Length: 101
Image 1: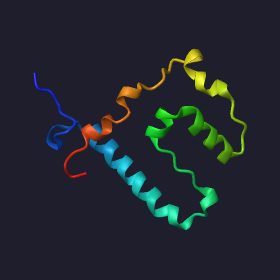
Image 2 (image 1 turned 30 degrees about the vertical axis):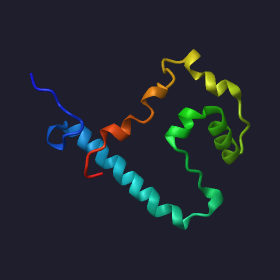
Image 3 (image 1 turned 120 degrees about the vertical axis):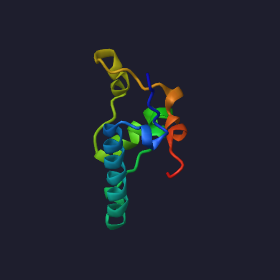
Image 4 (image 1 turned 90 degrees about the vertical axis):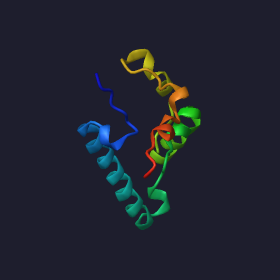
């Protein structure tokens, strides 16, 4: 049985290549749009910050959207099939980057 490695581009499944290409393109398009936008139209949120400081980050998002922050948004896992992200995995993307990135 052969295992696939996310770090070896030759062994990545096709869906992963398509997904990562689309994700990369979306990032490039966003970076190209931001300079043409007014500062009040842009709020960039880093995933790492959202995981490490969820209440503060969600508060900033709510202010940006002009909606009132509700602490209950932090309890979504109590009434959902979704669980909270594992903070230990927050930076796993760094380990999975290929040398060309």
